Length: 402
Image (tube, rainbow, N blue to C red):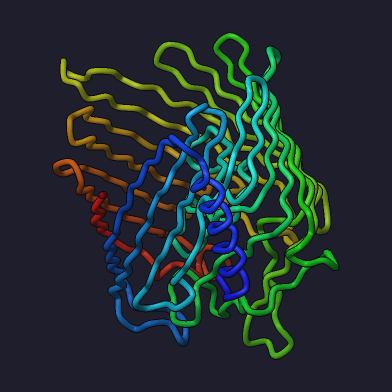
């Protein structure tokens, strides 16, 4: 985040803090955590300028300050996030995941500030999740997000929940620097973002989401109009770097989940009017859970999902265009919250495979150990994932909560 953006966000945080400090008999909640993370890449770096060491160390910390007034009609949240990376300056980050004030009434809620909003139901890919920008240097799974400035009006009625989002400021995607991993042969110049809109990052984006349930089916319908969170990457004039280009798009999305006994059937689908064309994409499948396996407390879930994307070559890159995902989830349901998720993504057209392993366990009340392993194989020089062919890694993270 550049200095101007940092100043804007922390000014917002100060204003929010001053607001809530005036309240009497308020309820406050404070917490924090620190994270020590180390990655070991199984192969040497592939591209010129990348850090030659196969090890990478980073430190991150998050603080959470939450407030609610005595009448239970107002609340505020302040969650700053700081990350420092030893190998890649572009991976170091200062962000506000949340910094908002909200007023709650019986039938509506108004939220003003920076917030993180998640949409979606599937495991392997979240097509409809478009409010927050992806923190792409945090991990290659796309699960980490940046805080988004917004005004959010939520209306609760008998026929469902309606959310309106007005987003007056756009967050650029993070990319690995010249020294970093997870990048193409040419680095992305994040200092020179390009925009279709003449107002650039100040374009006002709009989104609308309706959610409800009918029996065992949960339904989400969404509309988005504004700056694409997925930039196209175009060469600069000298041909030695890529420039992120953010187009104006319109997107309609639907997410469905059907719950029946041990079955979860899931679907996410979008239709997007993008840079050069209108295209559709979808991901869908099921999760079946075996409960209390072998008379134990452990549950085992089996997952299967199919990914389709009909975008053309001129649109932002997507590697989930004709892929299968098969996975399993183990939850021991013990006092240490031990859980393991393992899955394989297989490209039907090219034969590429992506193996993902995630394991988490808590020790005592305050320590959490997380393991990640990600491996790509079968990519050919003409395949999109070939740029990451040398970036298989093992990761260990220790988190201490206060």
